[in-house]
Image (spheres, rainbow, N blue to C red):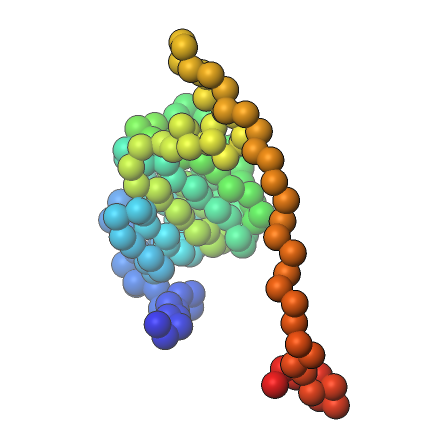
Length: 158
């Protein structure tokens, strides 16, 4: 499969910005059933109207700074900070006297909290009557004997 390059940033953003925004240009970098990744550029006094959606969204500030709203809480954000917008909670973002660039990563579907238990090493509890699996026994197999199959002058295999 050939390498795919998706261009974003200056010269590649939509001039009108996403719906429900003012003073913002942006470019979708990826979109499929798993989620959406976009780059947004906020001018001074730009705004993403407060809204909610059913997906967990990461608002990742990479340049400048501004403000975010999550529920009733309003916070200042700057480059190097990421804000989590939980599903079904009103959220928004805006700038006042500065510009801001951010990546927005919207994850589709339900929270994967159950998977986190597997990744952090928590084992499930045994059901009544289940017996634990005994530890395996064994050792690594010795490598097969090799003939000297390299050209010592170049160090490369023959």
